[in-house]
Image 1: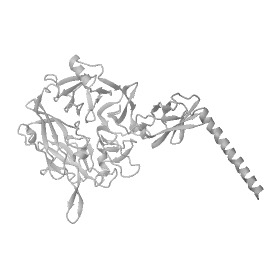
Image 2 (image 1 turned 180 degrees about the horizontal axis):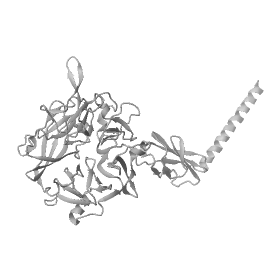
Image 3 (image 1 turned 60 degrees about the horizontal axis):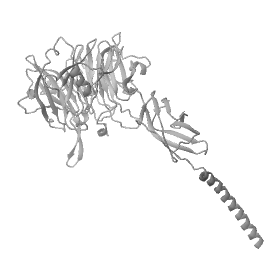
Image 4 (image 1 turned 30 degrees about the horizontal axis):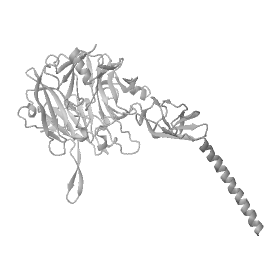
Length: 547
């Protein structure tokens, strides 16, 4: 028994000694040749990248000894699939996915140890980001859409251009009609995978007619005639514009008549229809819908502003669903959409409450620097009386339901020298936006080939500035309509498109020198006969409040 115990103790000692010897040798490798641990970081300019773009990433490697290790190998993967084996990633993005793992494995070939760094990356459609869209006529007169995505190259502004994006996305199919108008509308996701990019209503004469086009696939998703309760347009109705809001849709005809649809939800697809037996009325009379000022924040605003030529006044067309406490029933949803409310200022110094005798040439809306996410929306009108031109500048509160929102004159009625540039013999296009911290808007207006900028903060005599002259009549201008808009998109009848720099330094140089070489940031040609320019946003500005 003692001999067995001695043998057992000896065997145990030999075994433990063997283990200790192994650990010691391994430990010795790390002790005598100190490990140079690597921390791997992947800096991303954005968590989104666009399919087809080149993604360049210079990883940040930090070494514990302060000295870089030699003999390293690299392996980049996206969603577990190898995409590169060089230290600096230069990847033409050819895989899609949302919130996927972008990983870099750095292996020290001397020690055999691999270090990892990772980041979440989403690859999105090349059409879903903010960008410029032009609606134009091809040589045969039919509609064409061109999408231009802003980006930078060599630290300079440029655009990735996709001409005839509808044809490319639909196997060569065409919209087929004469282009009239386009408007964007915003949606809210109601389930996994729901498309929440802004969509486009395309109004045209003939061809496919008035269609709703997906903002991510550019495929037709809806036809306006099928959305009327009897499966077709009312007799004599010729659509000119469609505005799709949160709970209210408006189809506007050639004579300004407005047909409406009230939606029970803000889902993309719903079973509600336009009513074809009556048009939108104010005081029992049809409203003229040819002058409507849409705003990017229509959800927070609770509706849109319209100038009704029939009643000679400003109206608020409500787009709102609100919860109301009903005794015995709790909170009950109440729909106000489609209600028409008269706006009043009670300011006797301005004709706002009664515009009889005035001609309204333009009304536009923009979001002030501190108005995003709620609060007042800024509006501007160009009006004329007895061949004298004036600018009305006012704000309108958000609508809360039953009562008309408050309207306030921001700037006393101001006479402006527009008589030589706004008249029946010239082509006039307008756009409105705020820029920088002035708290005052820029008004862009064209007169045939000339583009003017009315600068509220300019010195007297230097407020109306000729910003640019082009080789063809201007047919479209847009800025996005928001605060701190630094760019304007301008489309010409000859198919040329320009992105202009609206920065204060450029404006001041034009005022001082008469021109600036910096004003044109981007130019594209061959886009057909441009009818309209639109700055298409990926999604609504106040998107978070839709959830």
